[in-house]
Amino acid sequence: MLDEEKVILMTKMTAFIDREGKKNDAINTYFKSDYVGYNIIKSVISATIVYAICLGTYVLCKFEEVLSNLYNTENLLSVGRKWLIYYLLLVGVYCLATYVIYSVRYTKMRKSMKAYYGNLKKLARMYEKKD
Image (cartoon, rainbow, N blue to C red; front, side, top):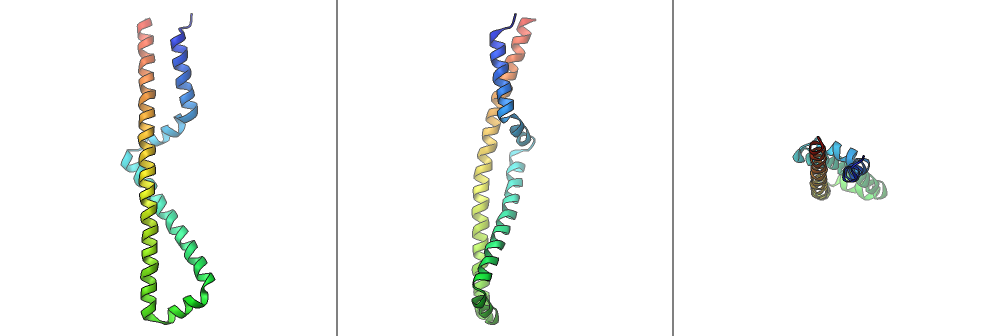
């Protein structure tokens, strides 16, 4: 005869695996610092691409102004510093947001996996008690 408590627990665990298990399993293979660092590197690359696209669009729209700044070396340095500051600001915001988001995701994943492993131990104790 089936033990109703075991069936409920196994159903809960199966639902967890179907819902979050595969995604959490991929995250669980990393240490927190590695997981967050990897995603920060990806966000720096993404921010650089976004900035290059925005800068390219700006150059295409204001081509005459950009060309006049190229011939004026004093103005060129100030414009270059301004663009560099914008780039560093964008990358800094991206990195900060990435750090917060992926740290929270990792913490939530660890909490849910801890609950899953707790249920697994509880199920093992139920089977041991039966024997």
